Amino acid sequence: MRRWPAPQKITKLFECIVPFNFHFSIVWVGGAGPTRTATFMSRFRPVHRGMLNNAKYRASRHECHVTPGPRIATFMSRPSLVLWGVLNKAQYRASRHECRGTACWAARQVPILKSNPHDLRKSQTKKTQKNMNDHKTDQQTPCCEEDDLDKPRSNCGVVGIYGSPEAAKLAYLSLYSLQHRGQESAGIATSDGEHLYRHASMGQVADVFADERMFDQLPGSLAIGHNRYSTTGSTVISNAQPILVKSKHGPIAVSHNGNLVNARSIRKELEQEGAIFQTSSDTEAILHLLARARASDMADKLREVFAILKGAYSITMLTRDAVYGIRDPQGFRPLCLGRRGDIHILASESCALDLLEAEYVRDVQPGEMIKLDKDGVHSRQFAEKRERKACIFELVYFSRPDSRVFNENVDRARRRLGKNLALECPADADIVISVPDSSNTAAVGFSRRSDMKFELGLIRNHYVGRTFIQPEQNQRDFKVRVKFNVVKGIVKDRRVVVVEDSIVRGTTLRQLTSMLRKAGAKEVHIRVSSPPIVAPCYYGMDFPTREELIANKMSVAELCTYLGADSLEYLSLDGLLASVPHDDGGYCTACFTGEYPIPPERIKDKHDME
Image (tube, rainbow, N blue to C red; front, side, top):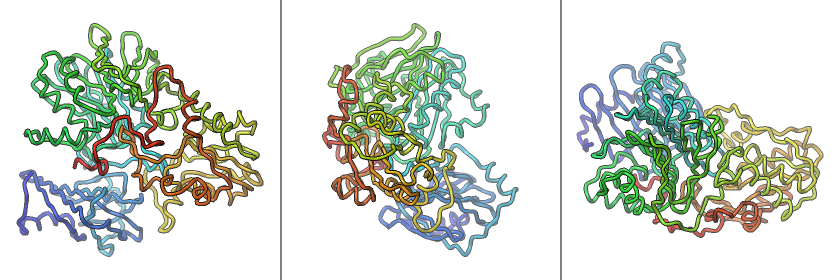
C-alpha cells in the first residue's frame, strides 16, 4: 500500500460518496485498472452520531471499495438499525450487521463520517435489491455478531476432520454445533493430498456456506474449521480463519482458539526482521515462526514454535497429509478427540461429536500434540506438564450444557453451581426463574436444593434478527425487551428468585428486574452462580475493561440498589471451585481474582496490534 496525498486524486474517490462529508487523517490507496480500494482512518476524533432517515446512527470506522457502475453503500452503525435510502440513484441498506454492495463503511472504533440526511431518499425497488445481491463478495466488510447484551463475549471454536471423503461437510456440521463460540466469521480449509483449499467469510456458518455448491470447491478427506469471535484483532475478512499460507514446507492452514499473551512482542520482533503481516490476529505469528523453524520434521518444527509462545491456544492445523490438534501446556481452552469408524475428529466441545454421531474418545491433554494421518492417531508431549489452568468460565457460561469439556459434563457442573448457590445464598421466596438460556441449568439446581418450584418466568425470543429498528430513546432497554418477555401469570404477586450466571455491566439485569416488577412481582431476589467479575481475560475471552466491569465500581449492596432488587448475592469462589472436579487439575479464575497464571504483556485492547 502507498500514501496518496494528491488532492485531485482523492476527489475521484468521492464520486461514490456525493452525499457525504468525510473527515480523515490517513488515506491508503491500492489497486490498479478499473478497481481502486481506499481506506480512511481517523484515530483522534470522537465517535460521530448523526441521523439517517430520521433514525440515529453511530459510525466509527469506514472502508470504501470503489468499482465502476452503480455505487451501493452499506453503513455499519451502533446501536443496531436497518435503514434504506438512495445513493447516486442506487439503493443502499444501512445496517450494523450486514454488508452489501461495492462501497462499504464499517463501524468500529475510529470516526470519520458525517452524513447529510437531506440527500437520502427512500427506495426499495426489486431491481436495486437484485444489484445488491449480485455484488456480494467474500471480501466485504464484516458482519458483527449479535449483541449478547450484558454477557462476556464468546471466544472461538475449532474442528479437525481426518479420513472422510466428505470432510468439508463434516467440518461444516461441527462448526454448526459450535456456533455459540463465535458468530463473526466462519471458514473451512481442506486437503486432497496435493493442494489445500479454503473458504471463509464474515457471518454465521449457515450464511457462509449457504450455497451447497461451495463444498464442491473444498475437496479432500482432511479438513479443519473455525468459528471466530475476535479476541485479538478487528472483525474484518482478513482476520477470518482458518489462515492458509504457502511456505517452503508446503501449504499450511491454522485455526486457533485462545490468545497468545506475548503475541505483541513476537510480532514486533518479526517485523524488525522484515516479516510482513496480512492480519491483526495473533494467530498469524504462529505461521511466521513455523516458517522460520529449523527442524526438518513438522512435529519438531511445531515443538520449536510452541516453546516460544505463551498463553492460551487450542489449535487445529492442516497440512497436505495430516491434521494436527495442539493444546497449550496449561490447558486454558478445551479440545477433545472423537471417532466415527475410521474417521477421526477434533473439536472444541463434544457437542460437535454428538451431531456427527461420533464417539467421544478423550480430551487432548495440556501440552499434547495429536497428529491424525493415514497411520492413525499419534500423540506427542511437546511441552512439560504444568499445573492445569482450565478456564472455569467455560463451565459457568461459554460451553453448551450438553457438552463435555475438561473431562466434565457441563450440565452436571452447572447444576452443582446452582445447588451450592442455594446453600450459600438462600432466599425466602416463592419461585425460582432463570435468565434464559445460559443460567437455566443453574436455576434448576438452585430450585432442587432450596425446594422452591422452578418456573419459566422469562421467555427469550430466539428469532430476533441480527438487526432491528430501535426507538431513539432507551435503545439498550428496548433491546432487552425485544429479546426477553415476562410471563406475567407466573410472576404476578409472587416473590421471585432470579438466577443468573454472571454480571458484567448490569444493564440487562437492571432492565429485567424492572420488567418483573411491572409484571406484578412482589419481590425480586437475584442470585448469581459465579463470583463478581473484577478483571478482564487475556486468554481468549472478550471481557470489558476493568473500568467497565460494574463489580469494580460498586459494592454488592450498591449494585443491589442499582439493579432495583430486594437482595443480591454471589456464589463464593470456594463454592465455585467446589462445584467442579479437580481430578485432572486446577482452573483459571483470573476474571474473579485478578491473579493471572501467565502475566500478560501490557495491552490496551484487542486492537492493539493494528
